[in-house]
Image (cartoon, rainbow, N blue to C red; front, top):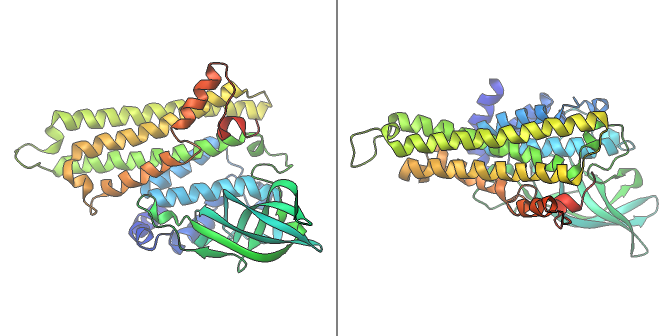
Length: 372
């Protein structure tokens, strides 16, 4: 309850400053939420995917930007921290927050027993709260690339934030650009790519594309649930113009909330059913086929699409109130569309899943470009 009060109380401030307020980030770190999927050796809880989804959905119901921020932090710790064996001192303190980005690839040029890192990375959610930045890089020697994509772990003050997150939806996520200009780091701070560490971890055996999709669904579910809550509250008290009946007495309102409820619940139920099945295969080391991943991707993308459709129905039934900045539906409608735009659950991923179901090779990154 205290965390809910804090997150809800800071939501307007997050919107104003375009990043997660420090008290919220500190509370997430202090309660171990960023590390719920990290190894126990790094103050983590190694939580199963269903638990991760439940936590992210709950926080996203309080505030979409806070939920997105937490989701990215959970993924980053789960997928990068296991590779930080030789530089674990950077992240051992439970108060440390990690940020990272896969949106660009910088370069790390060999120099002595380390590397000089340069680049600019976009969409670094939570960068203002982070003390360590994981930068996707390719290693170079004598001006020639010598590695696939790896990560350079760059601590403060060696990275800087560029004020670029001027957006409508998820404004409070603080997904600004981060720049590193010729900073030297020791070789021990070059770590495995996202999810690529050699660690006896069930988290890392989960197919990477699927791993990156299900937590986005959790954000959408939380925001959509907040939308249903807000509409029910509105319908109880609003009497639309040119009528004497309350909003909740309108058949269109009743249909809208019913359709929203069943669409959100149906999407969530399918994702969770498939997630449990995939996790069981991970635990038993059974094979997860491309078809398995395609069906899961289809479920994740459709669930997010369904959440957006549910909120659209509610906003339509709410009338002009849903366009007023003072009403929660206005921000909810902006926030949830951003989730659908993320590449891991974007609608076009449904097409690629359909290719697989028809026996054709996948062409998109989520099904053809990751392990599993």
